[in-house]
Amino acid sequence: MRRISALEIKKAAAELARRANFLLRRDVLAALYRAYVTEKTKRAKNILKAILDNAAIAEKEKLAICQDTGMPVVFAQVGQEVSISGDLKAAINKGVEEGYKKYCLRNSILGDPLARGKSGFSPCLIHADIVKGNKIKLTLLPKGFGCENKSQSKMFRPTADIEEVKEFIIKAVKSAGPDACPPYVVGVGIGGTADYSALLAKKALLRKISGKGSVLERELLKRINKTGIGPMGLGGANTALAVRIEKYPTHIAGLPVSVNISCHALRSASVVL
Image (cartoon, rainbow, N blue to C red):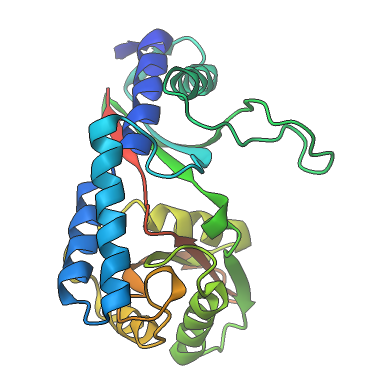
């Protein structure tokens, strides 16, 4: 049994806050560059260039890629052969809080979603899974709410055909329009229960967007890009950079489908302890 201290976890979480907010994922940068090279609409091309320049300046100057530093969502894969000396959740929450304060990242979290009031650092959203091995993998996804607000879920009847599901996904992107800062990465969760399909959709955003993806993912990407919404909603051939789908078994009486959209600044960072 391998022991990992809560202090080590806290330090790692603080560092993830810096990396996730200052350094755009390399696969996302590569996809943005491909979009810039292939885009034929002048205005869209200029916007993509500005997005790339912004990411470069953020990395060089150690500044947040976006002023909305998001709701900190943490995915923890905990090896079943690990013994943690301390409180895992407290260590993650404290580490992320310290990282946000140290690196001057905007705190946008409200303790009471109904009373609203002044923001103050509240616990992260933590999704923990027990996995094989003697390591812990932490992934921080700072999820901005310009795009999170465009999430959609639907409980289809079990007899629904694939075309109905495709149309729902495409309509969700059309509904987002320019509001969530395209070009998007579209995460889709299919199966499980209503809540689990939404989690799957968010997990889909953690997958690398390099590579072609599945046949269904490629078809959806092609159809979404034909909408012409384009970068920042001002027209063009690149409404989305990728579509990623995660599936899970479900009940015979249902077909849950969720869509979680990310803006062009899809930020996440991981560490293995």
